[in-house]
Image (cartoon, rainbow, N blue to C red; front, side, top):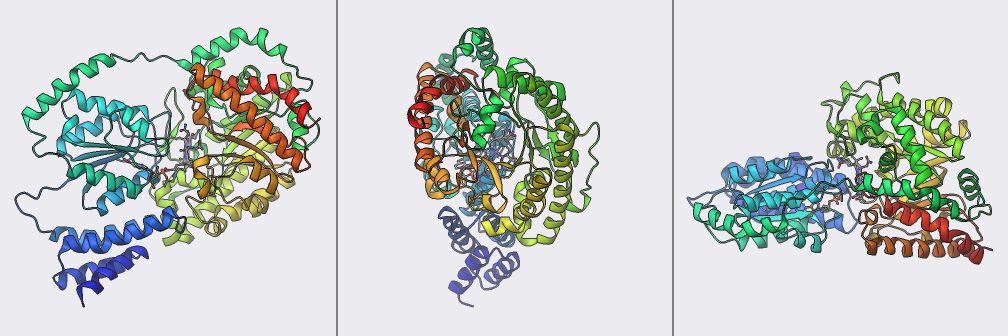
Length: 631
Ligand code: B1M
């Protein structure tokens, strides 16, 4: 077979995600004397680039990327031992991982795949990587680069700590430091002293390669290390030691102190419940409801730790009611974490004192999944009891409580690991479906108990994978979408409750909302993602507003900075959003069906006064704006 045909065969095998074919062509390459390195780069890696491009253009979804990666690794396993080496050819190690506190792994895995495809030896430390592990491994392996990912604003600070550790040890100039993930901008990367960042996995490896090729030789010698140590000594000394201030607690204390003099001055003529229910029915209100997702942050008024908030029913209830009252919001949405079901199925959950719990240990086999009974001691039971208590207590302030729990597919990906489930969806659909039936059964039971025992005002299901950056709509409808339509929508009807859905992703397949008969949908909007399907209130109200009440729009990340300038910005943007929503409602013949909110949880370590900058502004300016625009 001609060399070109072999290389094309390798490329096609990766594009099709076919492991067997990749192995077959890899063997052919060896048999026909094609250089192993060339076969990897011009065959396998080329295929990976094709799929990656298709993904960036929205023509392929995450499962295709994961299967392509598997095929690439299958071919590489055969070819790698035959890569020609000479004395100067040492492996170029790159240490890869998601930083401590963050368990998002899909993007990190894609970056690792592209790094591997470019011919580097990626040392994958996984997710939730202790910060000193990056430095330790880089030192041990004399790495040419460290590649750190994070998807959360709460954990991005860890990247700077790694860079400082490298500086302290005199290793900063010995390697390239790349940082990335959705919240990482070029400015941020620069400000923490990273060498580069990129918006996607292909960009990451392009930048990494050009930076690595510019590294001078012999940077790991003793003399360079001690020169580097000296160089950064002063910079580090200037930074000093950072004080760990609990900004959430401080700002909550200030709100508590001001509450009695500030809040009664608002011109509110409806109770929280009256306003929320009226808006839900598109009836006249005194102003639009406001309900940012301030789940864990509310614990700062109790105060209690995040661990207590998410694992003790009384603490959850106390936080829900205190948050509703002091933030002056019209609906509390009870997100504790997204691994309640996973915990009950036996996945290992890490519950830090002051951060959101995360699933860190997955089950080995789908077959070992057994549907547990919801009883005292289970996390589901605790959440049900917490919502029961919260709903009872919230009656005193006439405020609605929306209980929340993860839908069957989020539950399954938390139990088995997202990367695994998303690729097994294609290779082992029956096994995934059976497992999904089990989580569906558990989630259904949980919903029933919520309706019957806890009786919250609303019950919200979290669906993350209806997201066109992850799965195509058809593929989603074959899995969780089917359960949403055939199991959960009828269940909500049976209990005469509106179907409420939260998707903290910003680009879901919007048309699915109708299929499930959704009545309330909470979303995020990221203007820079409009080409990927992120939509604002204008589009949503115009297209679905009559059937669905939307809440969201505002990115929770905007709430992390409580500098006076940002507080002022939040206030101005809140006024502008109300004006625009009210005008859009009016243009569409409606009068109140929309909630001013954040589309995902305000990080639980954030400040509280950014929240009141939104909620108090709505209370203060809302009535006049409402009168002016709606009448
Ligand atoms: Co979470 N989540 N999540 N989540 N989640 C986000 C990230 C969030 C942005 C949603 C939102 O606000 N709209 C939000 C963070 C907000 C913030 O910053 N404060 C959020 C939150 C709040 C949370 C929890 C705290 C929710 C809760 O429990 N209260 C919790 C955190 C748990 C923890 O980590 N401690 C949580 C949990 C989860 C799940 C486990 C349910 C699940 C993750 C499953 C998994 O990965 N194993 C999940 C998911 C799926 C998401 C969203 C919906 C999608 C993330 C994703 O996989 N994207 C996300 C919303 C969103 O992003 N729209 C959200 C697809 C992936 C291919 O893209 O990872 O960005 P990405 O990678 C890209 C680029 O960023 C880039 O290349 C990749 C490929 O092109 N890139 C690099 C990545 N690394 C790079 C490195 C580089 C360069 C480029 O150089 C080194």
